[in-house]
Image 1: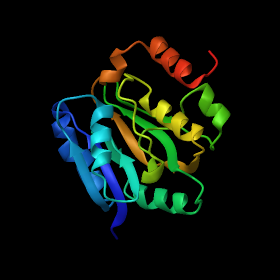
Image 2: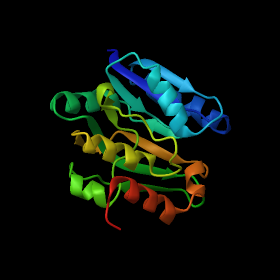
Image 3: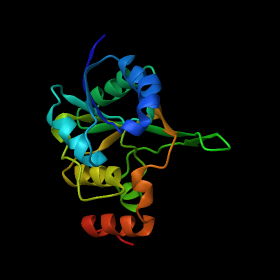
Length: 199
């Protein structure tokens, strides 16, 4: 069954081997109606926004090129999202597969939708299924915590999430992401100032 989902992948050529061997096949097995790969130079947010502008279907899913979708991720997320017409997006638990020695798997269980919890810290992954009409665009000026900013922006516009209560994908830590090079505390401060959050 083909699902009415546009998947957007900001791709970096340094991850080509993993992308073609693991990431892309995992997406194809989920049968989205559209897969958009943006592999030009530029930041991840710019690439995501460019991909979203080409989306032809009612649902958006942003998948980084170091991620692996679980086999029924899109079907499960769609089922949850369609069960709650008031929800803007569906999100699951986080699983990080760290390939740096010593290899390990880190499970980060999610929690149910709670705006006050979200205002204290980010707990929702970028790889969450969105209604396209609820997508406000990523802030290209941000170097870190772009996902936190996205969910806060949606919430400020009246949207909310629905928790799937299981992982939808695995994030593979195969290199140091570009966002990791930006100072954590300064990045946190920028988000809190933008959204009027307490420190």
